[in-house]
Length: 468
Image (cartoon, rainbow, N blue to C red; front, top):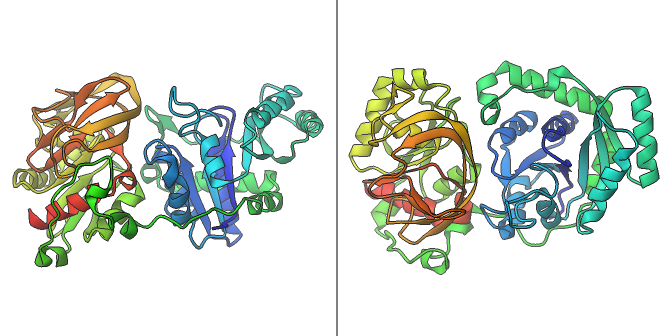
């Protein structure tokens, strides 16, 4: 595969990666190109802005959650048929999973994708020193090709001239210069940027401002030429149907399980309701694709506004998001809360991650939730953040006991108790503990997981929906 592509990276967080990456996506899309948007790491929020900029689903490339071997196939799957792919990095260029070298870093993903890197540098407090900074990043790992620099937060024409002179001496081309612009800044809160789904027209205006600033300050033709210099990727793209085709026991990380081969059950397409809307914006696109490939009819609903589950719902998936922001509205939708509780009580499969876990509790900050779990949730003072290695403690609608998966935690809430009589996961790294709840057909946990790393999860969940 040889889709032209760029990786947008930076020396550190806060340098302007999201502004530049989103602006480039929108600017190239405005030229009539089909632009494929990608984000390194587990973040759910930036891909929402990417999708708004391109009109295509934003996709994540996470070498920790999925393994480095899946990065290129997942990229090719998302970029199929596109004219250009833009990949926004995470943190600093060489920052990845703590204590594990380059794993899950932007640099690793750039090398796997054979893609040139554009370094976004916050130049607000430096001039000639920018050359030393860029030289250091360019020479640190010869496997990473930095094809140019975009200077952000440049103060004046004189400042720009000094920066260009220094980088000219360093032999690194300047592909763009951006001045400070308040209209492109996006509001943040306790977990980062406010998601697109919550901002409506304001998000559209912000992305348009990013596109205008990038178009005016960057050499789009030079950036496209750099993107075309990316090397061809070996192998084909990831396919949800192909990912589901091997027998479950062929995968070394999971024990064998019985398959439901009843022909009538296989012919059924159970309706699996997936929570969406402003309160539940965190989900990986591949999850719905895998469920559909496994034979499900995937229907999205909004727990803030929909008073009933979709007609014929046989299973429920509730991902991450911000229920703490919308607790009063969620609590007020009593009819839906009761229907979800009844569905769970019937034994139907329910998979809940993070925000979904909170929604299934008795209460969240004193506001009644679904009451499926004998647990209470509240906002806390400490941010819980990081990758986790986990193993399924017992059998559930998602996995058989002993299944190993990698996950990510990202929340400021606290659930008490933190685990049920039957925990969802035994976390084995970075510290040993149990967490989450398995209760009848319910699997609820703080861990965000990426099902492309373990497609049998989607198959097992869909089969349980057929037969429950």
